Image (tube, rainbow, N blue to C red):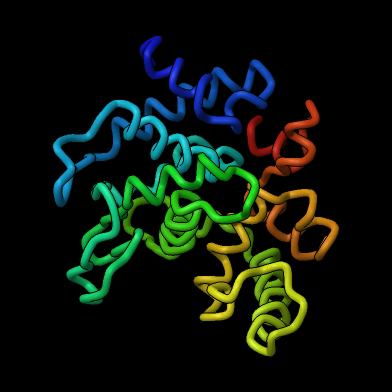
Length: 240
């Protein structure tokens, strides 16, 4: 990676800033590989894709993937489209801030909405994390490119059981940690819960420690332990 790319991480990406030094080096390596495996396209009135856009969007994906083996790159999704703001989706004919289209291997991002996630890093709402969580779940089921079945089946089953309880609680208007969007279906719940996992980890763990633990084991990392300077067991094994 260039010095300019590293500077963007150092200034704007808290996850990278809080990693132990050895993991920072690996993060940069994985980020460079991710960027090389994607094509970025400006859409709408966006005049071009800047280096900052490439680095921050890709770093968000690497954050989610960092506990997995290095070959997991979400290869099916090789195109990232960036709009300046909300856009009219050709898939749904509705205005969106972002979406994932597995048919065409596309992830779509509204840059304005994406950057809101950096302006409010602890509110549990982050468009980049949300869309890449969708892509992660879909990639796990795609078998042609050697990246499938990387989510542990036992922990996924446990996650589904716990998620069903939370989805019902949100639907019934109960006192849930998760916003209304999470109640739409298991796909949306997963994306919303992964947002909370990275942005409100401590509160999440207090609210539902079992659900939090299931995500630790699915993603092979624990932000609470990692940022405290430690290495969770599953995370260390995945990095070996």
